[in-house]
Image (tube, rainbow, N blue to C red):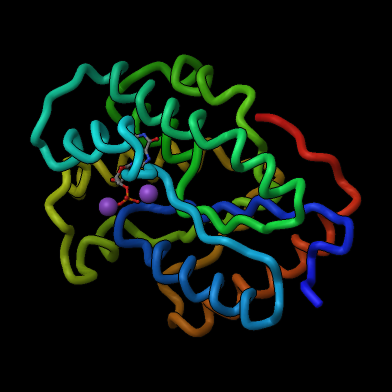
Length: 210
Ligand code: DGP
Ligand code: NA
Ligand code: NA
């Protein structure tokens, strides 16, 4: 028997955090835990570099192309929009989605360049609202120490500090802040608890939009 799909919908669980916050490994660990428990769950990530929009984003991040700040902002958003219909059908059919980055990355990274925050939020309106946003809180200095950055466009400590400030201003009731500097197993345990309660609690709630 598959949990979380007994006529109920799946949960939209988003992980956010700075680069090198441990987000991607925690997403993978959480996903394998949920699947192991019999939950119907999938791992997603944004940007989704597999689409043609995603390939433009990937080239931009690798500094292989230059794009105006607003243009790349709208491409990141378009990359979420092009997956919206599939996301909705998965959730409605009972699949829980564990998503590595979402609209909050979109707003925090672009606002860190100095773009107006309301302008940054506007294209995210109408995307599916997460049931739970887990923010892995790691000091920018600590994140930078973790095996270094990979060399992509935003992987610079001064920029990441600005991103962190904007993330802090975006917190709302769906956010749970987890101290990402705790041991990996401790973080993993907290995420398991948060995600499993979220999956139970969202059953009776309709999907809503940002
Ligand atoms: P990742 O594949 O998770 O390492 O993300 C690639 C980089 O792009 C990372 O520095 C975070 C940044 N990023 C992710 N989503 C968005 C977005 O929607 N807008 C902007 N401006 N940056 C984003
Ligand atoms: Na990255
Ligand atoms: Na991503």
